[in-house]
Amino acid sequence: MTRISSPARAAATSRRDVPVDTLRGIACILLVTMHVIGFDDHSGIAVPDDSAFRWYAESFIYLRMPLFTFLAGFVYAWRPVGPGTYRLFMGKKIRRLLIPYVIFVALIGIMQTALPGANNPTDLAPWQWFVYSLSPYWFLISTFWIFAVVALLDSYRLLERWYVLAAVGIALIVINLAINPGEKTVLQWGNSLTLAPFFIVGIMAHRFQWARMPRWAAIVVSAAVVVLFAYTQLGFAGVVPVVNSRHDLLGVLLGALFPVACLSWRLGWSPLARLGAYSSGIFLLHPFAVAGTREIFERLHVTDDVVLFVICSVIGILLAAWGTRILKRYRPGRFVLGEKV
Image (cartoon, rainbow, N blue to C red; front, side, top):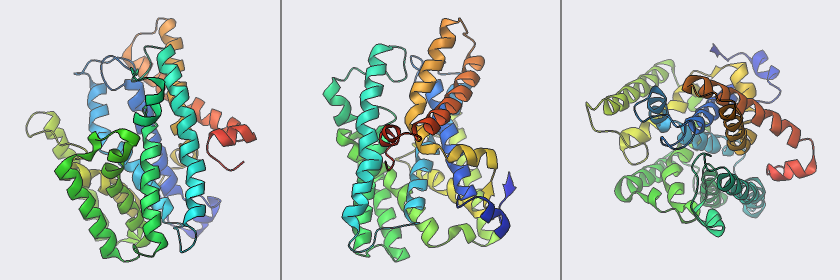
């Protein structure tokens, strides 16, 4: 990766933030490859629990959805809600999150019913798809609740001070450590609580310019990320207890500090940044691209795990990005993606 710092380079991004888009690209790769592998040995490419692929999927659970949530908070802080704008803001979030949620939950439910080998096949009744959600679209409604609460507080200027945001973040972490709200799956409000600390950290990273922290501070944060990640590996090796990614303080710290460390060095790589520019569309479309690709190649009797992983990951990402570009050309397509028509 290269370090992005010059004003000329920033101007060349055409208003895109290359380090942020790079993180979006990383998040997309982590998410798509996870769904290629599957959540257990009966989904995805059906790898056994002792495979290197399962190790990869479990190792990066500390970063995947916390990274998406951190970025949501960071980008929200670019244009936060002010007094008198809450209703307008939430109207946009209904369009951006809830409309795609309804559309894609229905589509993924139909696909999982029609293709029993699809990722995370569901036994829920169709009406339950929307109440309990289907992966990965639970994230849409989870972040909607986070936006609703944070924006409401911001509309009254209650989150302007760093110590208020810090207190809110700490309180959320304590709640997650104490009661494990992620088990409450009705309309995903429990997952909203588990992800909210990362959203708060994203807001703080932008508002208080953590990307411009002194070099020594960036080194300390980066070292902490390395140490925390190494500790999680000791858990998988059986040396220490396995670290829970949402309900263990070390797991939460790893998810929160990783994007802060990346931004503190202003790391950017244009191929990842270009991919990250399509992150919302890739998130919405990749389950269909991955499942379709896997189905085709398995019918062609391609059974090698490595080959299937590479093919499904690459084609899944590219098809999702290409599908996003096509949908954005047409009003119905933009509506489906949650964009302004």
